Each structure stands twice: as structure tokens, then as C-alpha cells.
Length: 332
Ligand code: ADP
Ligand code: NA
Image (cartoon, rainbow, N blue to C red; front, side, top):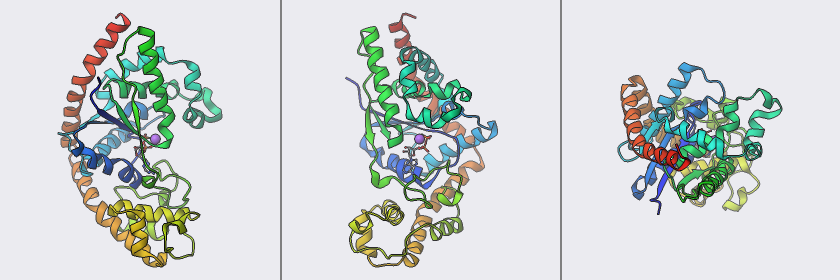
């Protein structure tokens, strides 16, 4: 009944990392030939659930869009836009605020983590964030959403909201969206701690490679990446208790489009003093054309703004009728 459609949102709350590239952007670009419609949203309304400097928010939204385009996502084939440009997201979110229960929201582990002990002082938007996320997905009747571990519970809530709405109003209107679980192999971990995911929000810049880092910065960060003193093993099993070493092998594999087994086969017995420079060369070769293109786009943002405006228009063609029908179902 529902045609297959993928939705994914990324917050413009900071720069893009190698984790975003390998875990999201690169795969999005590769999936373009599948024939499934993809909708990629710079979720600025989510970003402001914690205070954002206005000039930085504008810049980060454009930089995120530049990152998508430079990574090979074709804005003609996919829909690329900023969330606040499509007011239907916030309008549907209000309906969902009235469908979702307080108890559901209180159980969200990310709310507990982010608000912490000082939850009285967190924004109301941060608490209600998952209802907006449900609206982001369901305003397009998206059938599939790529999710990392940390977003699984939110997608579960999106499904609960769709089910409750359909039940409350006796309709079969919203799809029950399926998660597309991201494989562990493309989870990029911190360069300083192999048990934490590489993140733009990590206070240490040495823990991550930013998509805008130059060749020297990339080489330095990989050279300084934490490892153990042993050489690379003969088989992948030899990396089981060596998360930092395993991470560098995974990154190499993802950048080279080969399997971690193949990386080991090619580099077995190598010391990190040898492997790290190879990895750095590979990372620079893959990332520098992208960062060059990002810089070109950022130099004159009119092209980015035009692309986002075009995406807004196409997104609204889908979103407006869904909102209209939702209002009718509710009796408005
Ligand atoms: P947000 O907080 O805006 O949802 P994130 O930066 O957490 O954005 O993630 C955006 C996208 O990038 C998601 O698809 C996420 O799974 C992916 N991603 C982020 N960090 C990593 C990482 N270290 N390894 C793999 N994928 C990642
Ligand atoms: Na996230």
C-alpha cells in the first residue's frame, strides 16, 4: 500500500565527521541507484532543542548540505532540504504531541542522558523531540529509516505514534516504518577510545577526523590515534580484544570499499608505524576531493541555498497533502 521511501535527518549542530561520511553520506550516495526515493533533511528544528548560535546554525546547515552534495548525493534524484523550510513538520508534530503520552517520552534513554540531573532546566522541545522526529518521518509516509543504535528507541516510538494515531481515529493512514539497521562494521569509533563512537560532540578534536580537515590534520590525527604495541594479526579474530586496532582496520576497509578480512590479508604482520601512514594516505585521497568541493560550495552559498529551496518545494509537494488529510482525519 505504501511505496518504498527512505527518510533520514542529520542535525546541523556542528561539523561533519568521518563517521558521518562512512556511516551515512557515503552509503546514501551508493544507494541512489536502488530506485527508492530518498529524502534527506537538515533538521534545524531539532538542533535548537539546545541553544545554537544563530550565525553558526545558518553556516552549519549550509555546510551539511555541502557535505551531502560533495559526497555524491544528487539533489535532483534525492530530496535535500532544511526542516524549518517545510512547516508541515512542526504542524504534524503538534498533532503527535497530542497522540504521544508523557510516559513514553520519559522513558527515552536519550532524554535521560541529555537532560541529566538538571531536567527541570532542559527545554520543552528537547523532551518532545521524539514526536517531532516521528513527524519528520511520517509526514512523508516514509517506509524505511536508516538508524544507528542510539536512534532505535526513537524509531520504536515513531511506530507507536503511528499505531496509536491509526487506532485512535480508526484509519490505516500512517505506515509502520521499518528500521534499516546500520552494520557494526561501518560504526566509526573515536581515535582516542575504541569503545566510544566518533562524534562531533566529543570535546577532543583529536578523537575525530572532520570532513573539512586538511591532509596534515588527517595524517597527524591518524599518527596519534591510540593503538596497542602489537602488529596487525594474521586473521581478523586476532583483533577481537583490540578495539582501537579493529577500528583503524574497519576505517581502512570502509574507505577502500573492501572487507576488513581483505585489509588483514593485505597488511598482516605490519606494525602500526607502517599501517597508519597507509591509512592516512588513503583517507586523504578519499576525503580531499570532498573537502575541496565543500569549500567551493561554501565559498558562494547561493548555489546551496538554491538547492535547499528546490528541495523544500519538492518536500512540500509530498508533505502538504499528508498534513491536509491528517487534519481531516482529526476533524479540522
Ligand atoms: P544527529 O545527532 O544529527 O542525528 P549524528 O551526527 O549522530 O546526527 O549522526 C548523523 C548520521 O551519521 C546518522 O546516520 C549516524 O548513524 C551517522 N553517524 C554518526 N556518527 C557515526 C559514527 N561514528 N560511525 C558511523 N556512523 C555515524
Ligand atoms: Na544521533
